[in-house]
Image (cartoon, rainbow, N blue to C red; front, side, top):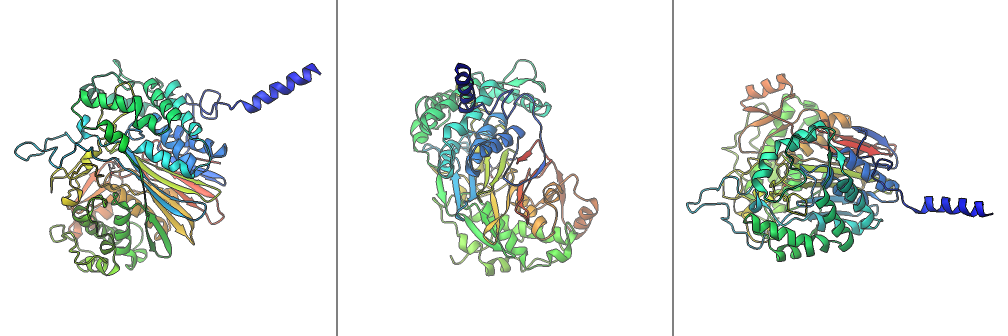
Length: 570
Ligand code: DON
């Protein structure tokens, strides 16, 4: 009898004590792990920039969480294992379709501090102070991620404490670096030394090597404060205090009030139809949804399918749509809470047809001749993740610090990098930002305003049900990468992995050139040059994650092969 009771209590203890999700014996082993680029599964899938983050998301769903829970846990894990872009010191956008059929969009973009001024990056002569909006304390907007995650949690099933625990464990116990991650950390040592006075976990006297373990104790403690006090554990109390102390060490301008006042905002998603599909995109302050709308509608009635995938005429047509949409971005788009953005006029069918009137198949257009549309009536580092569950929830999230490792400033004692999102404002009319994008009045700096983004988290519905969850990092190349991936699937009938992996091209009005990836076919390139285009070669364009729902209801999740991105599911 005594033995039976003992046995029963041991069994009970084993069942009731939750096994740690992260650890050498947990479902997610941060010291030794596998990675996959594609899965086809029935119950739930995650695609993100890091294998450990995708695994965390999947395990959360296996333990009863839905796609919203998984999206939260994956983002928090990315903030630890993918410090180039995963963040709690940055911001992002979420587009989702709930199991109920409702579509939602969440804006947790950074905001300019209440002390920000239109000319804060200009010297007395009105010239741009190079680098000030990109590196160091002054480059940072008030971070939005933690507020965004707590808003997202309204649609989840599990307690936030459970969703954040894997990230706490990854930070506290560490994870093993790959060669690529070690190299990346080595490449920013000089910047870290320049923009920080308090030592942080990324800094090391001798070089990092693949196989080293990165432990982030300060970050673990910050995450614990969030676990224990909710969003106030970040925006108030010790964490906020540490942010303010960091600001004072580097002439930054974020105040305690700025932190306390930060709010994520639910927005009406930007929705349009394309060839019988419904596209659900992000509205202002991201230009992503409107650009996608403009570009797709400008080619919808044209013979794209007859031209064929990456034929010179198809690429040319898509480029001319890109040119025109980006010209409008520069002139008309900015935070719609501050400036009037003529969204209806910009996406009006008659207007878009008019915009394409001077497009000539086989002949290069010119950005000199293509000015932003006259509207007379009002009618390299970010990260994307996609999650889907069997209940019908689909979540598409793009989140960023802007540049790789953001402003390179780590909040002393709090262990997280601050963004350099202020550079996404137009710091001076006509002066290009990091991504070569120009802007004007609509995207000028103002206190409390959100800088214009290109992030394009997107969900494509077919008959009202999720068909494709897609998105990517890549600055201004984001909308064009999403546009090309969707067209590759809907118009050109490519397999999901081909739609993601095939080389991409990009035109953004100014500069007047087509940027192509190195692997872009030479014959197409030559044909475009003959039409009169200037072609430039560049590194990767985008790192797309995509989940497609197959006709039998299975989820096909694909992670881009341009990075260590990984797809998980079961
Ligand atoms: O919001 C934006 O458009 C940019 N801050 C995104 C930056 C980005 O994608 C960098 N990634 N490579």
